[in-house]
Image 1 (cartoon, chains in turn red, yellow):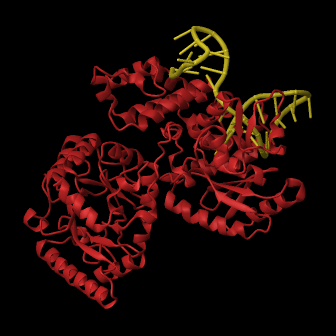
Image 2: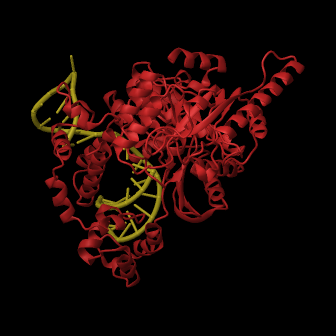
Image 3: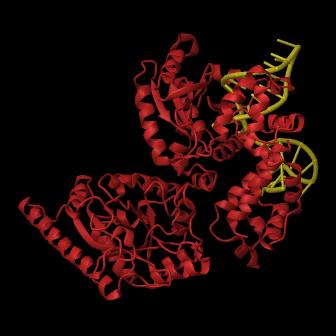
Length: 601
DNA sequence: GCCGTTTTCGGCCCGACTGTTTTCAGTCG
């Protein structure tokens, strides 16, 4: 069983226990373990096979879960899981997808009314049978009717970060038009740069509820053109649903609490749990209003009205528990607290560090623009070098280049570079504004080998190897194809190394540990493809590559001029992996990059 | 179910909002 499958089992157990109303901390233990396993790159099977190591060395894995992992690795069934599955109907999870229905209410619906589907739930509401249950009433019944459609819609997946970002920018612009908004920031998983985003969170600084400022802010929020319905509205908190079923939560706080609220709503939940545990050890309590000493008799509402000592900025909140500010992209409850504690927080790579873009297409294959237009667009974006990497001939659909077409394109690139050098001389510059590298994205073929011969490839400057066909092959074959390319001295980088398309296609089955090891020993780079649907390598694998000493290359894989602007999507993924500029090859000057390549080959 | 320099039991983060409650449970993030 793979790590991902084991993580899936623990998640399922947590879901089932939740429905059964089990101890919340026991449920959390399973979810923590699932997260730990999901975030590992080395295989649990490998760790188990190593006599010098124990499964319990990982955070959140104790003796019980270690035994369960061993059972799963042996391919044996887990009795506990089988019993739980028997005890909980599958429809329970559909019912819990209805906003407002959690495990307790779902259980009542199943056990008291025999609800076994969302359709049955809808019918029961319409017949007025739900309101008679204890804890339910007319309003709850109406709310279920209104929300059941949301649960039924299979298209309600998490948004790509890029799509969330477009929406966030529109929301911020709209809200800044409100006079009562002093400051506004978007928080949540958008701010952490997660590859997909569920809800959006906005934190606003404004006056007190009594002054009427909060009402002004909320009215303005409700007037955002996409708002379809207001889900809830209280003194400090309001939630709306936008067209497309996107939920946006708004929190309004005073300036003295703005940093604490921003920290709180940025999450992640796991990061905050660790942070609060730390505060507790110091006799402090952190909430969305600030950091307070723990005193007896403090009520929930008192924090809102008291002025916190530490809460105006995020830096204050972290400082109060003895830590430096932690970049949002790292706040996943992984190693970031440990790093912060030991003063080892990385200085994360930024878009400004990027000097070159080493994967893009032109209309010679499936791109939209000419070579000259892509080069001009790169100059306009301040890039110092680019590689033109159209498809090799295997990608027939894209009219991939055979050797003679490729060599003609490379001659064209030579002429373009000459023109750029000429321009530089005219402008009195020592170096041209842009250097264009002669590249190609060759295909790693189904039966092994590449779709262009080495005699051609060795004449190029920058060869990307990608896998587009035969993605369903078994793990051994896929891994073999990639390892073979890595061993080829002409190959500089493996493009989108897992092939996954978020929300559309899973990664192909590849032994990424072996790929990373081979890349490390040959000096081959691995790509972080910045396309918002790819983000491949992802944060977990990119972090593993970094630990192994592999250099990453962040590339847009642009098929148009606008495609060049996606670099920031790749950079934010790299930041989540804890990458510094030194870990990313295309932050180097071209000269240094070429030196690095020469030294590794 | 995990964890431990107050260590093998008793903790485990914290608050807003809603609805159905006469004081709180459930849900959510």
